Length: 151
Image 1 (spheres, one colour):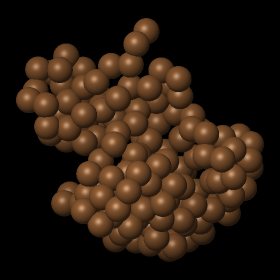
Image 2 (image 1 turned 135 degrees about the vertical axis):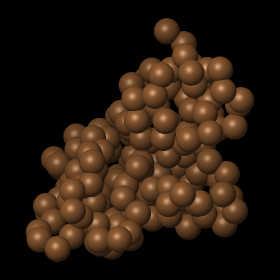
Image 3 (image 1 turned 180 degrees about the horizontal axis):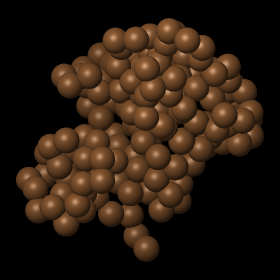
Image 4 (image 1 turned 45 degrees about the horizontal axis):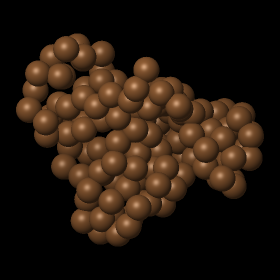
């Protein structure tokens, strides 16, 4: 099966259980690529002077993409930046496996950290948002398992 592109005004509609046929009928405002190699959803985004590097946990705050944080009141994680293309473009993976050579994550389950954009193997304690982000399968491969944030 070839890669397919879908469009919708909401950048996370496919992750919210939106009807795929409805997404196909919408004007093409936002593109998603369903990646059959990594079995997931990726998107290349243009945002002037973005601050992201590969491996950053990021989220959409309703206006722009920002680094996510487990600090209460901050933007939760919606995806992981998997490529910093240039100062104004980056690729985010919302779901699936990704090769991030030398990613530096601890093997096994990793959680959103209180450091903006950070991911940690230590499950957060009381007083912060608990959100599962990824499983580091080996030193070069991660599986995104982004869960609902729990306060």
